[in-house]
Image (tube, rainbow, N blue to C red; front, side, top):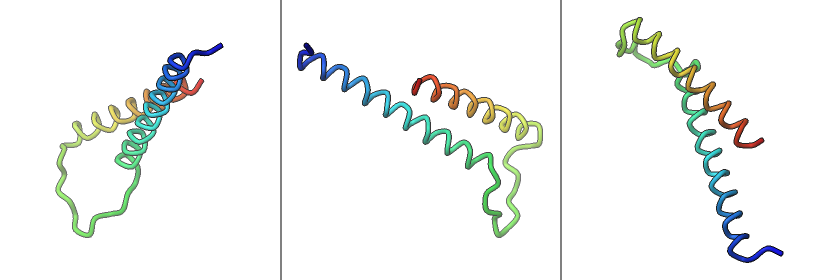
Length: 77
């Protein structure tokens, strides 16, 4: 038989897991929108990063996104 405190702990852990997955989903969506083709600016924008830095940033974002997806799969399993 479950005691109320045990139920509260399990419920808290599940909610914490749900919040973690939602946070990962949100971060994953933000990375995807940053990496994906978005609306084109009306005026040509100045390049913030030089090409090698931009390539490194893209690779880092891709790696981070894959890590987030892996974490989400492990969290829901």
